[in-house]
Amino acid sequence: MVTLISLLTFMAFYLLYGTSKKMATIGELGIGKWTGEHKKIAQAASLALMIFSLGLSCFLWGLGSGTFTFFILLMTVASLVILLAPLRLLNYPFLGVLFIGSILFETLLF
Image (cartoon, rainbow, N blue to C red; front, top):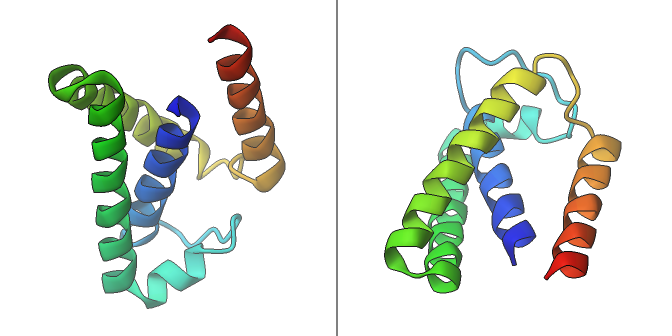
């Protein structure tokens, strides 16, 4: 569940990052060009994903802890996207290994 919340938060922030005017179109994940052309749809989808992720976080940890955890996760994801996207390190193999490792740690440790 934590991995799903993290994945949804990452997708939501990456969509918002793609709609920024300051971002150079990288297109590493294939949605950079689409978000530049469809900004309103991307922003609405990003907002929906963030609200859904916040809801799942509040469902899992409770209202106060879930909100706090969501914002900590959002700050972490935002920092990583802003640092790693211009270096072109956010690609499918890297993200696949990251989230598969996260799922393995989540299932093995809990």
